[in-house]
Structure formats: C-alpha cells, structure tokens
Image (tube, rainbow, N blue to C red):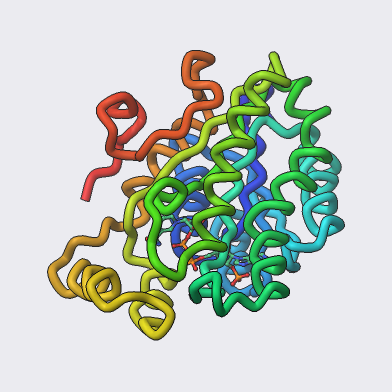
Length: 257
Ligand SMILES: NC(=O)c1ccc[n+]([C@@H]2O[C@H](COP(=O)([O-])OP(=O)(O)OC[C@H]3O[C@@H](n4cnc5c(N)ncnc54)[C@H](OP(=O)(O)O)[C@@H]3O)[C@@H](O)[C@H]2O)c1
C-alpha cells in the first residue's frame, strides 16, 4: 500500500449518503481503504466485492461503544493506519413534540447520533494524531432550524456541531469539521414523508413538495464535499459547521450530474 493511501472510517456506509461517499472514496482517483459500519450487511458486502482489498466492515449498531472501537481496530490491523473519519450514521426517530416525548427513544437517538461519535473518536484520536487526520461530522440544518417534533434529532445535530468545535480547540494535530448536507433524496427523506403525524402540516408539506418538485439533492453532491474535506480539510476550517453549498466550500464540491 502506498504511504499516501487514505484510510477512512465511515459510519453508515450501507446506503444513502454513506454509500455515496464510500463509492467516491473507493473509486479512481482516490482509491482509499475504507472501514464501514452499519447494521445491515448487503450494501457493504457489495462494495467489498466491487473493490477487492479496499473495504472492511463491522456489522453492528453504532449506539454500542464496542462497535465503534472494533471498526477503529479493524482499520489499524488491516490497513496499518487511520487518516480520517466521517461520522455519518444517524436516525431521525422519534418525531414527536417534547410534551409527548418517549424519554427512552430520545436516549436511543442520542446513543446513535451523538454518543457513538464520542466512542469512535476516543478510539480513533491516537491514530488520527499520528496521521494528522481529518474528521467530518455529518450534521443537519435541523441543528439550528427548529422543526416541530424534531427536538431529539435537532439537539443531537447541534451537539455534533459543538463537538467539532470542541475538538478543534483540544486537538492541535486533527482537523474536525461539521457539514450540513442539505436535503437529499435518501431513505431518511422517505421516513419524513411517511411520518407526518408528529409534525405540523405546513412543515410536512414542504418535505412532500421537495420530493415531488425535484428539490432534493443526489447524495453524491454533498458527499463530494465531505470526501474532499476528509482528505484535505484545511486548518482554517477546523471546528466550523457549514452547509455543503456555501461558497466557502466551493473548492471542495466536484460532483457532476
Ligand atoms: N437525507 C437528508 O435529507 C438529510 C438532511 C440533513 C442531514 N442528513 C444527515 O445525513 C446523514 C446520512 O443520512 P441519509 O439521508 O443517508 O440517511 P439514511 O438513508 O437513513 O442512511 C442512514 C445510514 O446510517 C446507518 N445507520 C442508522 N442507524 C444506525 C445504527 N444504529 N448503527 C449503525 N448504522 C446506522 C444506516 O445503515 P443501516 O440501516 O444498515 O444500519 C445507513 O447506512 C445522517 O447523519 C443524517 O442525519 C440527512
């Protein structure tokens, strides 16, 4: 393996944005090595078959600390280093107002969307220091836009933005960045369209319209920005939380329809 081959941990690599980012990382000209985590195997297995020698994966729930730890170990054991991580796996459920909150469902969401990041980072930081690695957190506009019924998800993404900023002041040799990928045509949007009952109708209608009027991005578009940042995020962007189509990120956006 060439000394410059990137070795990237990518959570939620089985479908949606994660699968789009994995494909870009694996293909020419990047030809990275990747370690994926997801609960379902087929998407990851297909990538492993398509890119022999470049893909390892852990089947499991990122809400369990040991799953994240195992993926970091796999990267180092199989590929000899870790040069970057993209924390992408997340869920939106539960959608419900605070007054009707199922506290255990909020805790489950935080285990998956937020505490998984801490477990993964804690295991990865020693290797990322060594490689002067980059970390891209996949955030959301919901971190700072307050949708009715989306309190659990939005709070987990606001906490994610905060984590990127915290890491920037704590880790001189690592560049962390939080990316808002906009609204994408993935299963998560399908989940929103079919779960209007916890939302207010004008907000739910907006998501229905985004789909019917072609307003959702292909995940490859924000995915191109995330991949280019995990390979080469500059120090000036450390700790920032920015939307993928912001002019500040134009140099990192190379998706062609
Ligand atoms: N879609 C949007 O419009 C949108 C907008 C803003 C932000 N985002 C963010 O973009 C990221 C990707 O979303 P997406 O739209 O690609 O969602 P998606 O289509 O629902 O895919 C989610 C991915 O995360 C994995 N995942 C979910 N829960 C997991 C768990 N407990 N353990 C391990 N893996 C888990 C899923 O794999 P398995 O099911 O196989 O485990 C899948 O690979 C998320 O962070 C999301 O919050 C999405």
